[in-house]
Amino acid sequence: MELKDYLRDEILEEADLGYISQEERDRRLRVFDDATSGNLAYQADPAVLSTQSPKASAQVDAADSQIVTTRPVAKGKDADVLTYMAKPKEGKGLPGVVVIHENKGLVPYVEDVARRLAREGFVAVAPDLLSRRGGTGAFSEPAEATSALGTIGRDELVEDLIAAVSMLAADDSVQPERIGVIGFCFGGGMAWRLITKDSRIKAAVPFYGPNPPLEDVPNIQASVLGIYGGLDDRINAGIDEIVDAMNKSGKVFEKIVYPGAQHAFHNDDNPDRYHPEAAVQAWERALEWLRRWMG
Image (cartoon, rainbow, N blue to C red):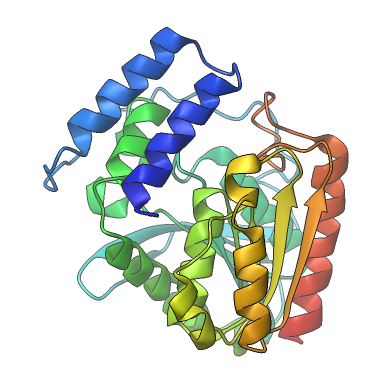
């Protein structure tokens, strides 16, 4: 599926499930279609201050004494990539994890996920895949951020992720042979794409992510745990295909489907979709998987 189609379908799904009104659906579609109508030069005004609501609470505070957070810039093939990094305060030879955000960009929830990983002993880097458009903070609302993602080529997004992997592997606290990736929604799909292009990834946990091109599955070197919500019909329609493709290629793959959970059920900053029990269970399984396959 084309990236623009996937992102547009997410707007329609929000309305179909009653999370937004029909009027809000139409407004978001207008913003999206205006941005993605072939104007690939679409760029946010960096002078705009984001009005997106900050996360009310976090599971791991940014000032937690056990971790260190920074905002380094990864040098990509043809663009710089803004990132958020969280790591344990001490340690060498640690495993590293790339955290890939949903379709609204590098929001507080995703930064909190990076800090949660740091508390668990991982060095986590969350790249801002809107860097080519000024970064997530340059957009006044989530609908604009989503629209801007639709103007960036999928190959460019993968290049930016590879830049984040390279920065992570070069960090003096990371053992470069111990790199993993975790992604959510749009980010889950990008995690799938990344592991078809970067053999350095040893373990991957895509949360409810759309499949990569099935012809690219033989390129995957990572051990993959796919996590899905039982009510997520749109994404779950592709489960059988990815299971078959991974099995035929002899890849390490397991899937978990959480009954009663919707798309984006791990996001505790999204009350419409958050499923506390499934989120806790899925997080524990994700940590177990990363530790198991990253050594």
